[in-house]
Image (cartoon, rainbow, N blue to C red):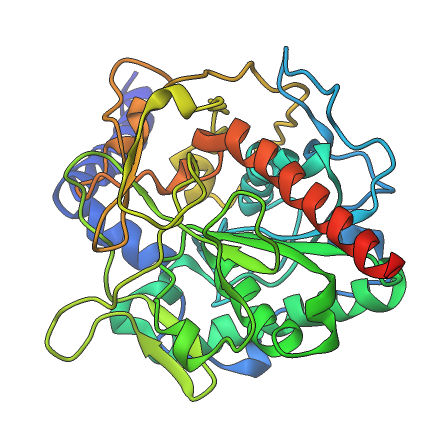
Length: 401
């Protein structure tokens, strides 16, 4: 009996101690545990992806993946059957640590589950008009976007971008064959897609193939259109082509994110100015497809898709992929919200309560970041087909002249 008591004692005592430590220092401990090293060392980076290997394409027309799914009950009668346009999709950040500054791209890690979520709730929007290509890349750790980690963080972002640029080059050489394309990204993916647009597409022969770019969820500074882009403009009409759609979604009275890094031809800069203010950001309203400050009624909302995020905090701490594969998508919820671009660049939406979307507004600044795409799933899907139709019509007309 005494031996059993000793065993129980030595089993329970560590658990009690762990509980006390987590209760007192939990947030600090978790943050420290997930944090990358203090400095970025290129020699410590994971091996680069090989885009001749299908594993390094998380979505591809020749693969069966969750970007192929269509929400239940959604009519596909106006979908394009012979798809002549491609989408190059750059997924957002799934890598939160632990580990180094960049993801190893191992399918056993928790970020692989995040990619499942992104393909199903974001990339699938475009399967009604386009072939979808999405590269696996050494995405930067989420802490790369923290102001106090600016130097190593932007070095990690540079490495991630190099993979995306290599994948885009491979796509152009082996898959594109001169076809029109759209560049689509979210969050970190939008950071890389914007850089691709500026370095590889704008003011080059490729611009003639650009249908549009949806670079959503990364606070796009308006000065990119005076200091960077020469041909590409913000979208201000539903059927405009060769332009950029960008917005960041917040609940009512939300607070715009600040101090995030942006790449310019002169180098990386913070979105926060020296006087403490934030650079004005672009907002294109996905209910009207204009950059005006008009409030658009929810009758224009074609449907949100409440995809459930399957990765848990425990999965993230253990760097574990729970292995959930989306087999189907739920029906869209139409007329869920109005939307209005505000002067600081936020896209404000109606506060959600007691539904599948409300728990995503728990952040202090009321950011709807995770649902930037799925909240406007129906509108973006419809608009992508509009822009493709306009591009193909204009292109055919110019060829016949």
